[in-house]
Image 1 (tube, rainbow over the protein chains, first blue to last red):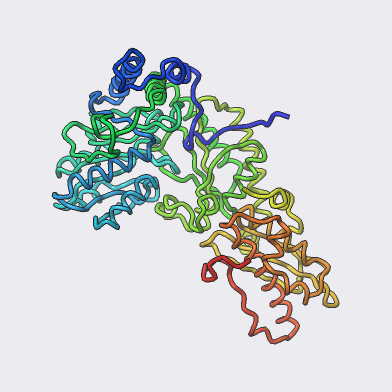
Image 2 (image 1 turned 90 degrees about the vertical axis):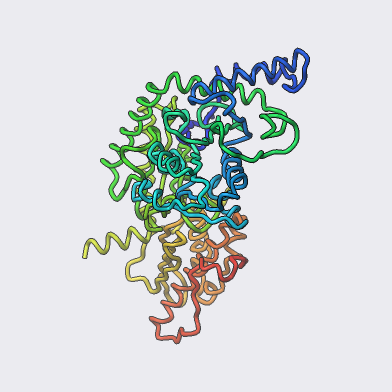
Length: 395
Length: 143
């Protein structure tokens, strides 16, 4: 029996679009040359990388020389943060980031803290938004880097990046944004935004896994990341992932060319899901900002139940979704993002993240709502918290 | 990540519910760690004739509650109070290491219900210690 699967975890990863795979295929098979080789096969690979670099730069609003390919979004984040911190440490050792960053930012920052750097974590409001005035206050003479994510992976909140970047620029501080969740979902142009560094990852927008990119504005002081050959202008050694680079550029092109249509599609599905869930299920809240959010992201907290149980039961019905529950994180604490927006532990534990993609349909949304309603009810009937709540309400 | 037995007990949990006028009720866990278990016992002539539970928690928490209640049904109070988290783990064909604390919680929930029963019977229960299952002081290594 074929398993019915409804994939609504596009913030985790996506499949590769057939056109993207088609663009990659020659570089996995007949055109396998090492881009550093001078003969025909090498030159073909080099040409493919150059074209992909130009194309990537074009869509981001950057210059090709400002594009560095990496092995992942995490690598781009690590490189940006450590690279800037070390290259500018004579100026100072103070870094500013936010409380709701991805671990790919929080962990390198924590690494630097242990190395003697100082870190300020900007708080967020109940919708996950950073107040630009807080950034202004936090910048010191010895601050060298501000790293604020463009859009949050869990609750979808989009930060006022342009405004934040401008504050940093005025004070002469380098500004990095982790745009892994933003690229492919919303229009991003580095020059319009006035940012210095940006990280992205291909597998979030129908490109392959294992390839990312770091945009570094010309003039930004950044240490190299991998030491070895002369690849990526001697900043990131290692034979290039040619098919991955080609695939990322192809996926980026498709994303930018269909951005408005894709946005509308995602918004329609999210709106339908939110409305129906609020209509049919009591004691639920929507996490993240209602307006400034990724079009395909919906993050609910269902009171009195726990997220992993909800996920497992939805999985049995074929629904592939995600949660910020402790039990899915491998620790006893629920998501740092949900705690940072002020949710109490028990409500943070009951979160469900649905992230839509191009193939999802309204019929699927309706099926998901039916399944959520049934599962939440079942788990509430099993929950001592719900029992207490009902008893209290009766008396 | 979960064994078939865990998934079976999670999908079709045994003994879910409440018992009105239960002879013993115990609740352990806390909201911070995301697991709360409540166990109800019906006891006649020192035999556990019925047992029900309600659990807020992950798949492992539900499965360990279900299995633990199955293991003590029909047993004497003395036998039930000897239930260990190890026995629950074995009956479920194991749990991932990060979920072992759920089996501790199941053992403690039953111990708490028995303590409540004994207290109601007028026994001195001051030496019965109940852990809340997730303070981590035991290193969650109890097996």
